[in-house]
Length: 459
Ligand SMILES: *Cc1c(COP(=O)(O)O)cnc(C)c1O
Image (cartoon, rainbow, N blue to C red; front, side, top):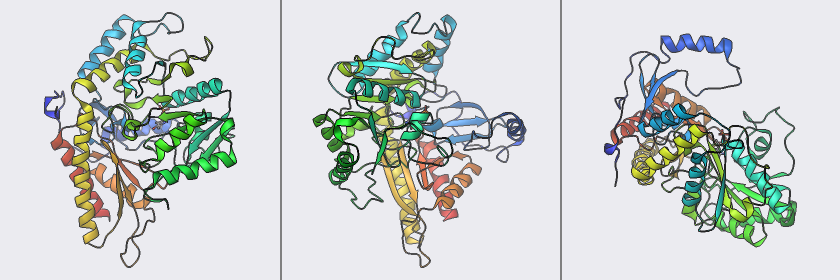
């Protein structure tokens, strides 16, 4: 198996603090930001980046932080992967843009070929490229509606699909994504998710799927439903892994009723969960797949790949956009995918899973043993692992009451020690670990030690 030791890093892979966080230079830029950047844009950490490579982000004061977030599951091959950087420079030196709708170029075609090959399903496929995850989801819905001549779109509790008008409607969580940003797009219906930790159906995925299907049939009707759109492992909603059988039962129902099954793999795709796509682990072959985040080593690119007979129902000129499939982003994607293959980052993701779950399980046992049962659940796959934090009762017995305050405190303590860890979840009580897949074992272990200590210090 390829290990991170085969990877050549440009920056020292170390955690090193040379100032308080944020340091003086970050404070200075932070003040300028307050006076210039719209207040609606948030940032998880108050430090400004100057450099990043492998598993570290170096800030403008020279602090070297361990990156357990990959800029939200984007920089899987590293934030300055040499092969990606070279491909970007080479393409930018020739042309940065012609518009594929005006003068097409080979890179776009090569990315389409690659995605058709990598995505699950042995059937003819076609691909169309865009810029962001939300744009890919919007277009998957456009394609589904046109090809089925139906309107209704089914989404799920805890879903996240983006911030555009249609994808806000599809996203579950009101704050901060939706509140007062409506009215939202019509014909979007939300169904109960399989959430093994919190749902009374527990690990019975088939029963959870039947519950959703019954509601779809009663409240919407199969014959008016264009598509089910679902994240195979939910991202922003809390890294919720549906119980086995949930996705496959939904997919079978879709096939039987000519409803399209759309997997939103924007966060879980591209080796993140230990396979190229998360839905493979449930044996599901979606009709359409949306992709973005990990696809291009940090360059903005997204895609919809799907069955050729569905994709090609759209009339010429019906899909596109000025920047969609930008040539520099395509060059980056081809290089990033080549790196994932040659470094076997799927195997790396599975290796990261064992290191992360081991460290978290030990910490959970210690905390439970100390009468502090704050870790309710550890879940996820590959390098997409979450810890759901809960509030013990007065007498120290375990409950499932969400603990968002502890979650925020742990992230804050970890940052003060030089570790960037993200939070998520409908209840804001999930710490999510999304390290770059190229992070070295020692650095990862150091980051986990800091995070686990932060859990113990704040519990
Ligand atoms: C991040 C995300 C999106 C939206 O992607 P953007 O590039 O931010 O528009 C859509 N779906 C899922 C599952 C995501 O995680």
